[in-house]
Image (cartoon, rainbow, N blue to C red; front, side, top):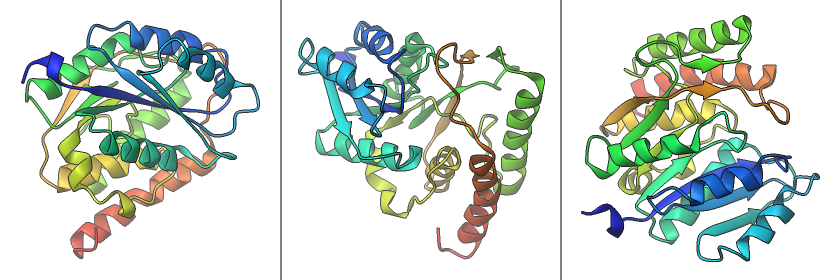
Length: 245
């Protein structure tokens, strides 16, 4: 099917991203693939949603906004976005952060991998073909890289960047995974989605990207999020072994 006949959507969860949101939206909208964007905002007190609403008036057919009350978490934001995408018949559904740690231009390569039937899930990988991270302190790099190794050992997934949050799903993956069973709500959500996609037999491809640490705003990473991810891999593996995934 030609690219012009396909409809790609980028889901961007936000909380206090007023410094970045306008610029990231405009860069995505100017990509040649004709992306639409859904912002899922968790009641940002800095006015993130208000800025999105202003841009919506210029791009009413391409910018969508869901405003939620309070911080409800990354996983629920993406599940809300996935349901929105399926109801509106988008063909490729992407995940991306709002803080420019993911380069919007790389969306083109992720979507192309799905459009040309190279895979059903294209992951923007920081660790395929070497380490591709800019401006991270050494300790964070060690923790992140170690977490991916830990996840691969326990789950046996052949994915080098198991916690990656930059990716593109083919619609059929989200249609056939029972999203109601996805309960993770921190960064373990990314691991769970990768694992369920792999367990369902879909093809996964890692596309090398450069990850740049955010220059505006604060990171959402916490010790609680890391603990959740560390325990979730065991839960997923055990559930798969007993047929309860």
